[in-house]
Amino acid sequence: MMLEKYSIGIGDRFSHQGKAQLQAVLQAKDHGVPLTPVWNKSHREHTIIGTTPANVRAEADAAVAALGWPGPYFVDADHIGPKTVDLFVQASDFFTLDVADFIGQAAPQAEVREFVEKHRRYVGSLAIPSIDHTFDSPHDRVEAIARKFLLAVKQAGSIYRRLVQLKGKDNFVTEVSMDETDQPQTPVEMFFILAAIADEGIPAQTIAPKFTGRFNKGVDYVGQAAQFEKEFDEDLAVVAFAVEQFGLPANLKLSIHSGSDKFSIYGPIHKALVRRGAGLHLKTAGTTWLEELIGLASAGGEGLAIAKDIYTAAMDRFDELCSPYATVIDIDKTRLPGPAVVAGWTGPEYADALRHEQSSLAYNRHFRQLLHVGYKVAAEMGRRYLDALERFEYAIAPNVTTNIYERHIKPIFIGR
Ligand SMILES: [Zn+2]
Image 1 (cartoon, rainbow, N blue to C red):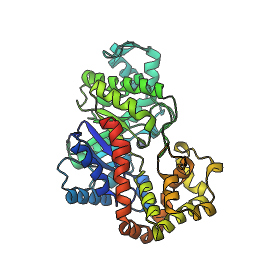
Image 2 (cartoon, rainbow, N blue to C red):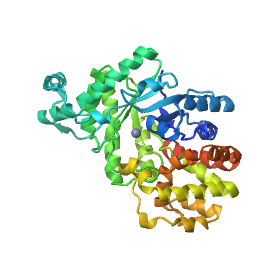
Image 3 (cartoon, helix red, strand yellow):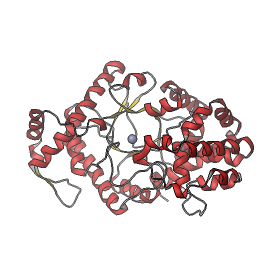
Image 4 (cartoon, helix red, strand yellow):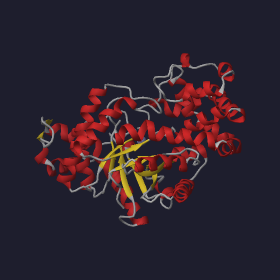
């Protein structure tokens, strides 16, 4: 199974927006930009919401049937590890092997030495044909890279081989992710990580490094955009060079996680992709559920009541909801409106505070981030929430489609 050049991960917390999401991908197709939709959901999300991988498969299949989607599509077992892989085998055909937990656990010294020896032609200095400067790669640094990442890559190898056993080779797409770690990986580190991935025989089609800067959930990029631009461009060159040097799949490309809402770097990303003719997988951060809240609030009545109840509960349970996401959110509590204030809001006032329009004075990124991690509250509402999604689909769906197409697909894949 081959992933095409451009693809988009459209995780959907409550498995109700498959059609509205796919509608955005159809719009891209109508504009001459083919994009493969990938429905992704992690074990953590499934656990919090009480869904299973089979629900995601059903959602994807139903959306594809309803809209007559003619192209390929995938169901991604997002961030799986040795303990969770088996749960996803049946429903998924895309597997994101998350080995971040093993980064920094030292591999045996003999394996480290063997790795450095095998790749000694790149030790000292690393020249990548399409980059105008060489990278220093002294022996001790390459050894340190091997010590830091080799065990993690070997772990990915063992999950990959388990999948081959259970699903058969070539029956799924493999991604390797190392984004959920504290240190970003430099282009040089990525080069040697790709060497290790090739050594392990993992036919990775996407690789998700941790990029420089902060990729907080549901809000814009925080960091030096110029530094990001430089490293992203170098990463693209590294991937292309590694494909050629190590015989990795020719369609290997970068995958950006928590990639939704990073408006300030979409321009540079688009330019770099075009300049290098490179592909990209963009995973959104599950923010489709915020479009559900926007739609519910806009609908008024019971929809608005639900949206307000969720905010009140999220304020009450602030620490509990935020702690699992502590490293990927940045909420200033003093900027949050009190629940009594929000209780007095009209539907449009609620929607405008939440909708990610940076030029709007009403937009409040603290409000948005708290609601983003508040999906557990909606999950606990059970039928009340799900029934509202169905009843107010007419108000929700256009928000879901517009958010994905106008704010994401257009600037990244089409260019404005
Ligand atoms: Zn991730």
